[in-house]
Length: 508
Image 1 (cartoon, rainbow, N blue to C red):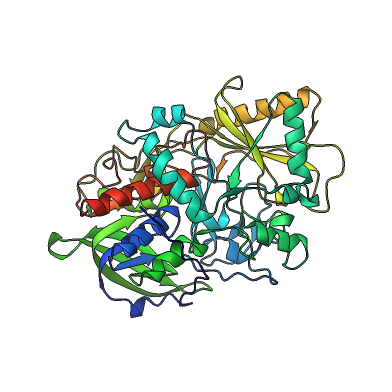
Image 2: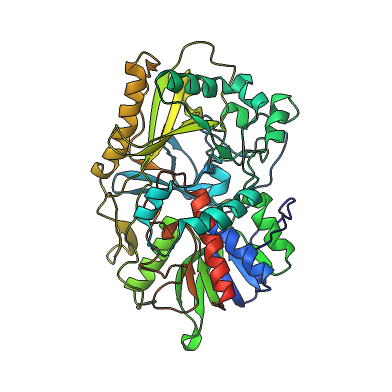
C-alpha cells in the first residue's frame, strides 16, 4: 500500500461537542493511540465515514510555553481523574480530579500507565520504535500471524509514517546526552556493546532546544508526560492529521465510552458516551450507532469494555478468551551511578540498547533512559523489557462493585523481569564499571500493558472479535501479554496496519 504522509498541525474543537455529532456512523473507532490512529487513517482513505472517540483532550504544543507538567512539577492535568499524582518514581502529591493526560490503574500490586489524550500512548511514551526478535515473536503469536509479512510490509510503513530514526552524532555528543555516552561506555567495558536504536524524536526540535530557540523539554528529561514543544513525532503529527485530511474522519475529544452493545434490531453497535469538561465534570451523555466498531482504547480499557459487555449480557457471545493473556511486557526499571561530569541536564531520547538472550534469568532488551524525577542526580536509568512467556493476568467483572478488575496478579508476577534487570545492572556494577545507586528502583509498574483480547483466541488472526460481525480489536489488547523483547508501539501499529489491510480488502 502506498502511503502519502500529510502532516501539519492537528486542530480540534476544544469542547468535544458530542451534541453536534450525528447519531449514526458507518464506523466508530474508540481511542486515538497507535491502533486507533492507524484504523482511522485507513478507513478514511477507503472512503468510510468514521468517527474517532477519544476520552482525553488534544494538547496544542508551544515552542515557548510549558504545556505539560512533569515529574518534578506535577499538576492536576497530568492525571486522569486522580486525587493524587502517583507514578513510579514520583512522590504522591495531592491534585484535583480532572480528565488529564494519563490514567494510572492499580491492579494486583502493579501500576499500569494508560494514556488519556488525543494521540494516546504516542504522546507519553519515550519514542522507542523497535520490533520484536523473530524467535520470540513466533513463540508468542499464532503461526498465521507471519513475522515475515510484518517485517517486509507493515513495520517499514509505520516507521516511515512516524519518521523514526537514529539519534544523530551531534546530538549524541551534546551535553544533555552525557548519560547516553556513559551508558554505552559502561556496557562496552562490561562486554555488552550497545547498538543504536530508532526513536520518533524530531531532531530539528531537539537542536532548537539545544540552541535556545525552543523551550527546553526533551533535553531536560521530559517525555513521560509529553513534550511541550512537540519534540516527539507523535500521532497528532502524522497519522491523525492524515486521517482528517481524507475528509472522511472526525475526532471527538473528551468523549468517553462507557459501554458497548448491539444496535437496534441487533444490527451494528450502540456506543454509550459521556462528554467531559476540560476542567472536570460530565457535561453531556448520549448514544451513538455504527455498522463497524473498532476498539482501540488500549489494552486495559478495551479489555474493560469487552469484559463488561460479555458479563453483563450486552455482548453475551464474546468468548472465554476475552479478558485473558494480559501482561506487563516484562517492564523493569533499575538505576546506577556513573563517574565524571553529568551535564547541566539530561535528555530523554534513548540512543541505544543491547539485547541479552541468556545469563540473567530471561531474555531482555536493555535500554538507557533518563528519569527526570531524580532532579539531575548522576544516575543512569536502565529500562528493560523482558521476554516473559509465563506471567499473565485475567480481567473479570465484579458485579458487586460494577467494576472490571484483575484479581490474579501479584508482586510475584513482576519478580522475574525485575530480578533479570537487577542482575544485569549488578553485573555491570560488580565488574567495576559503575557505582550503585542509593535510589531504590520502583517495583510493580508497566508503561506497556498488553493483552486482554488476544489475537487468534478472542479474535481471528486480523482482530475480528469472535462472535460478532463488524466488531474489531486493533490495539495492544491483541498482543498476548508480551511483545517479545520490544517496546510495543511498532508492533501494535504494525498489527493494526495488517488488520486494516485485510478488513478493508475483504469488506469487513
